Image (cartoon, rainbow, N blue to C red):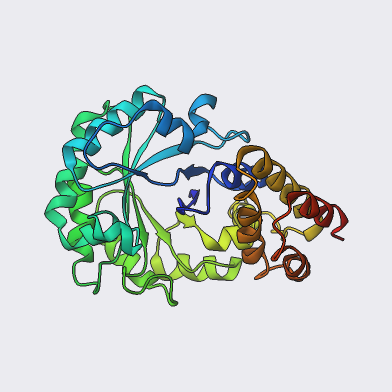
Length: 315
């Protein structure tokens, strides 16, 4: 069984990957997508979105990182994937699940689920081009509007050469609205001969147990659930090891929250750093009452020094 951290664009950047993987329980993580259109991207683009490449493609905690691509041109994706491998990418992941309208309008992400033949062509070309020892994996949704093509898409990915498939158990149109259709993950697993990961609507340990029972798969990718409950992967890992799962206390999380802010201040422009902190704090309010109070104080602040003071004073 493996637990993966989802590649959420605009949320799980290198800073949050660093912090979340230090908590424990995560077997591997994925970069935000690298968008490819019609040219070979420079090394600087990869190093900006995946600075872990400078650290053996691992976070500071030692968690392996995969490089994810998004696009619709098989050859261009393959060329960029091959270049990423020369920079140290250990696994190439292909995004066929992003529901963002701007991405879909430019033929990226979930809109490609309308074209299983193109999915197959992309995976096949990437698989053919990158070194044989580098795995090629893929992430998909159940479809664009309906689920009727989900199995054809999954087959296309597997037959094209994907060695692993993550299934976000909703369509593009459903977005992030509950429920997630975990029973469809089971259907996908029945028709492909590669490992399948379940993804979507796992917020708690009980959600994970239900997801595993309904989907029939042991492997899980956690997204918003892990961002809002940072100890969730550690809890799941404890259960699978036969140990008592303990939730993460606010006192344990506080130093990591402060470190997240310190990294954001150091790596981002002053006008952007507060927004990143507020984004994570807002999600933490789902789990921690203490986060509700802190978010109420921080949400209107743009002054970084004032935010320093608020975090230092947080009980």
